[in-house]
Image (cartoon, rainbow, N blue to C red; front, side, top):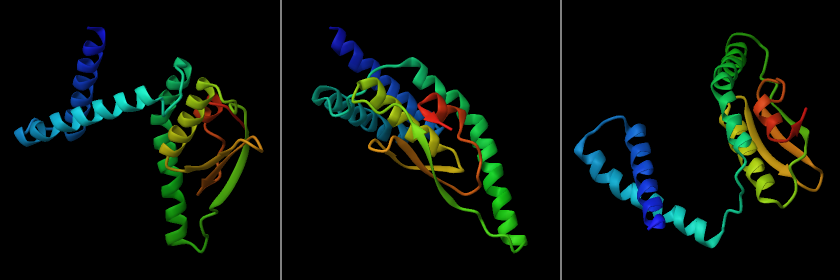
Length: 161
């Protein structure tokens, strides 16, 4: 019974996310949203049962998300500043690839989660694109348009600036 309840809750959550993303209660959105939520629930169950994604829960890793709103604003400002310089002066964008030490490199589920979140969260910011976490050299490799410090959320997830 608890498995069925978990599936039902997940279906409702996926449907609520769908409705939250489309921001309208149009009958067509409901008609498309229900199968989309069902597909997402099924896919989630397949991944969970086959253990394709071996990640472990670590609440503090998810909490690094709290830094994203500020980074979205500052990163957007950085990109717009570079764009303005590029358009109105002879100064070109100082685009660069950088490397920083990275510590969460083990095969544990918790480290796998932190690597995935470090890549996802950091790449969500406008001024960063994570290229790789090189486990052999112990480095996180990323691209930036304008050089700034490594984001605090990336440091919380294992980067060593």
